[in-house]
Image 1: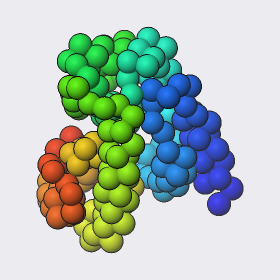
Image 2: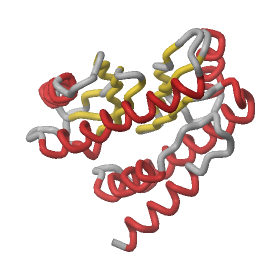
Image 3: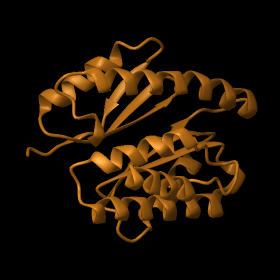
Image 4: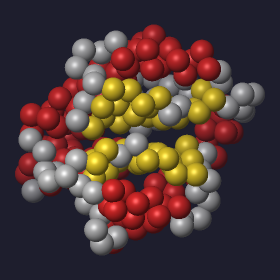
Length: 199
């Protein structure tokens, strides 16, 4: 239990927003810490991911600032998934470029959605509520899903579009997870970036 609390503190500390450009949820930080405590990965590998996430987040905020109104960075085994929404393709490409420039990053999945002419304040607030509900449902349903090792999965919802990330032991495990997510209300699409690595 002490390890979980310590990890929660570390993850939360790394996720304290430096600017309003990055949307971070302290409950997600605690969830990530609990997952890290039970994952079948080395503590060194987890530490590398946390370090990369902090560096990528800091660089994107520093270089892009208020140009980004919704962005999430997930790192698993040094692969990076960028999600969120920006107003144009140039900003999307910039975010990926900054992530790729960080030493130690193996691969970047740039899943940021371009939403032109969005009302930033209204849009971000509404999408946060809707997407948070979807992410909560994914968490609950995947925890109950037999055959899915949920601790090795990450997920993000952006305007109803869900992105799955992480590692599975079999293709069947990925298919099961995708099927569970597709059945959730208000999910528009599901894209799997989960890599299959047998035990």
